[in-house]
Length: 360
Ligand code: GLU
Image (cartoon, rainbow, N blue to C red; front, top):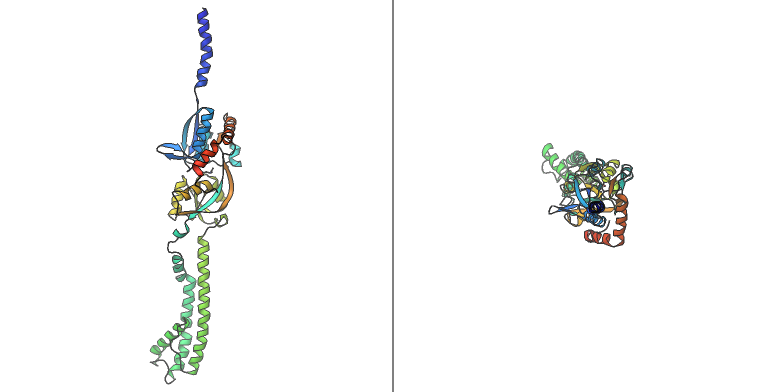
């Protein structure tokens, strides 16, 4: 009897210990966003994944990753309790904060702009713009008007020269005479007068027409320069103020997508940021707006030489770990995050992923 009692007591002591020793499994929702979450040889890696693994190790938690495609999918998984927390490059915003809880900031980020590399834009420099200007409506209208106006000096010169002995027209009859006089008037307009009328009226008309030609050339140069400048300014994005009306790609449901909609840009939302990069490189969009560290990483790795990250970070954001509201894990995770910052682990992970990327 005593033995049985002892055995029961021992069991009562051991059973809770055994359950306590079993590491708790946490379902972690995440989404690919290089270099925070990426896949290598079938394994998840990246800054956020490594940071999470360190936190999990400290708290002796087992992780089961729940992969999602977009940020809204990730939040939906938290809401439906299909995941206990979410980690990727999730920006902490007031709107999200109303429906979810966040850890304290784990990474300082912000929005920036990426465009195609200057030299690769348009290939032959200003050639397409130049052709557009030459065949543009305003230049065509101006040329047409001037060619019509040439008929006036052509007639005056023909009239004066046909009656002048030794005039420069070989034929004095109307059609061949006018043809030659018109050719002279058009040539003079382009500042290429090769012959001069001999009659007084003809000479007077010639001098006057030469002045007209100077003004015409000056006017034409100014108009062409102005159109070229406008063409270049329209094609260039230098900062967030240039985004309205431009075709800009970013990921679906991201903070960048919200910013772009408010800025009245023509937003193209893709599932992955890689697809946004592709549409920029293919010329389908004029820019990509996204998280600065992600853009800088791409520009210094696979996008090197084909894209440029321009301007400053124009909206500061912080990343955090997201939790369903009032979840049990937040406090311990926050404390562990602080510990990892204090003991240098955070810095080690940071240096591993960002030492060769210029800081935003
Ligand atoms: N920081 C962005 C956000 O939270 C990331 C978007 C994404 O990974 O698609 O909205």
